[in-house]
Image (cartoon, rainbow, N blue to C red; front, side):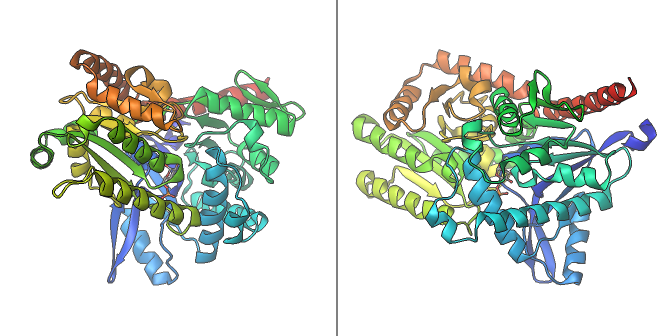
Length: 490
Ligand code: G6P
């Protein structure tokens, strides 16, 4: 009944993700809220057509009940509902199972080797904590849930959530979407809890991925590991007569947020400042979370090779690398930070002059307006992830490039290669010489070619938006549930 599912005329959508779109920090007796980093947040901020509630981890440890109440109230204004996780659970679930096990595995970096295991407890303890955390999320979702709501679970942190929710009420409509790659079943099968996780996800009514390849890998993991049948529509469990629909729904951004911001006096002032600062030099830009999968060391090595081989460019190009710190309690991320600093130091030492350095490296995020200005004045964007579910930095760059029509160098191992590939220079990020050569090609590209590539990409980014993505997923979920009901009635 439509009256049940609508609130002020709009579908109620409960978006559940590990991280809320805002991160909280304590300021004396108050809480200050800031937009969180990452592709998932960037996309979901663009989804405006539903009556949305966000449910997620507050990102801070809050023990005191009065404090929890104050934070809950502050978040309410942002339509966010916090899940409070204790420190030990965060350590085992978030630092451990999510970011030391699933994240690297899904990006083809394998399971933790001994040195990565020894700094946390064994995989089994972490998996127990993971299930516990998922069930804590389910309890909070259920406390907000009204009949007719759609619950949309996101990402590798919450693979158990569809099952927990169906156990609470089998009638809840549940979708699950993965924002990372789903690896080949040859990689996935190494995971000790492989079957339990797959079965838990299959409790959802609809399962979504960014690309057709990820969906295909998932279906083949279900056939090979669980012995279920893969069909063109998804995964079928014959004895139970249950079909779980699996499909690809490529994500996008809210391009108008960027296009409109570029017109604002604030961004225009920043644009002028940056143009003056970098006058006479071409700007290459990297914007990444400081994560192994982003391939930052490899990108820096490629830039070093480019400078080595192209003496004429040495004083005429500036690399700006924004590296947003992330998951700083996880050992591999700490190691990566020092590795990146070491390479940046070496390159700046080798090629710097008394007044300039070739790499401008920042270990922090930029506010939205400064980021837009930086995207707008960039000549070449470097998105060279070793693997990436989609990568929305490439989309954000394109949205800001109507003035410059700069070049996008894009990893063929990022999901975005399938949508922006025709308007980008595609590279294998592991091939340092290839990436160095792409830098030269990008700087030499003719205006006509840049224009053509940009038009192709701009058209894609402005039509395949976050709104379209969410609409398509939610209407597919409605259809899937309707068809399942019809099947039962037959
Ligand atoms: C990726 C993941 C998101 C995650 C984001 C930031 O985009 O797919 O689920 O929120 O990284 O990572 P963090 O660990 O800081 O939430």
